[in-house]
Length: 219
Image 1 (tube, rainbow, N blue to C red):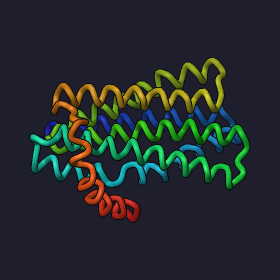
Image 2 (tube, rainbow, N blue to C red):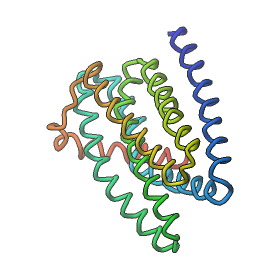
Image 3 (cartoon, one colour):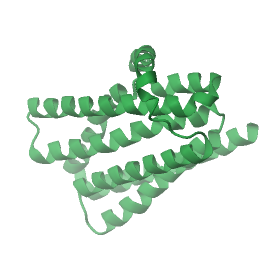
């Protein structure tokens, strides 16, 4: 356990350094105005991630730790709920973008960032199972993979002179790729994803998640 924690801590430090380098490179390449739009898009959409998450990261870690055999059904139910919440959140975000009178370039940036945020939030759900099974090295490895893939995609785009929207599309691609890998890994190493049980599990899970969603909003 101590060795895994030390490994995770080293991975976390590497992730922070690489993330900082990416941010510096993006800021220098985009310039003050576009980087401001970039930061706004990521920050604005992150608020809606709280709605889509619905407290499931904490709730599922707790539930799966107690009932490991139900991991596939619990994660499948949570993802079904989050798919609906994602549509609702995107609709609300689009409405707010219209109400604030964002220009077309900013609106487009926000919508692309929203897609990246949705994929990232959905990936957090099966990753909760890794934590419940005390496979912290898996979480650290996926975090490292995300930032490494982002660097491999973003740096060439900046070198070639691509701008704001291309960088955000790269973020979306990385998060979609990460979600696919996390789901495949969950299926192979943890439990078979059971979407068939979603309708039976979803109502109780949605009600249980409300408390954690409210709590996370105040943390």
